[in-house]
Image (cartoon, rainbow, N blue to C red; front, side):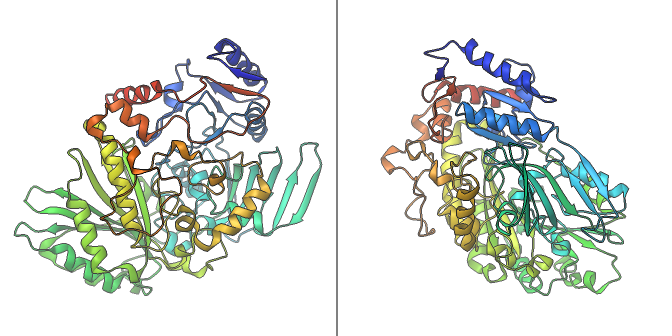
Length: 588
């Protein structure tokens, strides 16, 4: 039976089926496009990724997660899995999908007497933000490896690997993950550790088997790929004596056109090596904004040190703190707990419009070519209303003690110095330029790829060349085989996720071809359309530009006997709806 509310069946018929399903859920709630709450529950942090699901299920139990998966499979509906909306590339949302919203699954259980780890563990639901978890573990005098951005959620962050301001001392999030519970496409409920899998089958029977593949794959293979994670168990750690935040801000060029960036870059290259003490973490930021004194751009360090100033690890960077003192701003602040440190990190723009990209940068990548590219990239004015910035998370340290094949993240994570992410961002006035901005971001993504050894999928760009290799490197083949073993129909799928090439509809690709004059990776996405299909933004209305960049349908659904849809083909009105929604939210 095929239910198409625009042709064979009235929409009331479709929504009566939705109603019967949602009434059957035990404790969860649902939201449809006609509900007042729909606008808020479908909002993405990166508002360019706003989409319009057919139905949102706000699950509270793993049983309702299981029922939602079964319903989506029964009616051949693509399922998207939403945690907190921090998803720059929109993998957790989609038009005409069933969106499984996990934001209400906020269980938190601390066990300081756990046999699983000497300093205790915490079991958390996927709906928690990291700030909620930080507050909970702080009550017990512990710390945990999580995101520096307070509103980032547990699920996608962890399943993608998870770097942190303190990962150089404690390891990545997946290095601290002990157990994950996941609901699979066929209804199995799996609880996995690094060497075993416990399964509850649909008929109620159970099994316990030795399995080193499952946990390896899900802990680093990315969210929305193998199943829906409903619980995580993490290691806890005793906290440092104190945390010191050090901020240094230099101009890229001085008022008299002195290249300050080049000098500081050389100093950083001298100090930021494998000898950098594990106690140091934090970020490096680069932007092209002018300041009040006529200087151009900013090169900033926002570093954190675990422990007091009266230590050899802190003194290691003192020569940086004293470098070009008349050319920089310097600030140092001491925090008694990691929670207090995190409270000081404020999201200036909780909602934004941006296209991002990423590369894993090692010491050998800190070349003059990279230095000059970064300067050019942030100072160049690509369009009237866009700007390019970079934030590099300091990694390495403890992370390097884990083997390149011990987890499924790209092997480059275990040798890199920075996970450097760039963004081409714009405001409401840049919306008419979205086509041009998007094409420029894809070009920069291609260019920037050559400077690193791999990419962080959680922060990488869409239209990434040879994404399988760039995201997971030599680990991809094993990930692919485990994906087919656990989800042979590729029910769980998202853009540039493991196995998604089996579901990708190449005819709806939105990836432009970068300029051939630019030196880029030798590989290009298999879904790149011919150059004749590219249309200049000058000849497009804003709505049609959005339609090209964000097609309504990206994936070819599996054909089954039952299907539900609100339309039979790509709906051009969705692009207009998206444009008007962006204007509305930006005016709030």
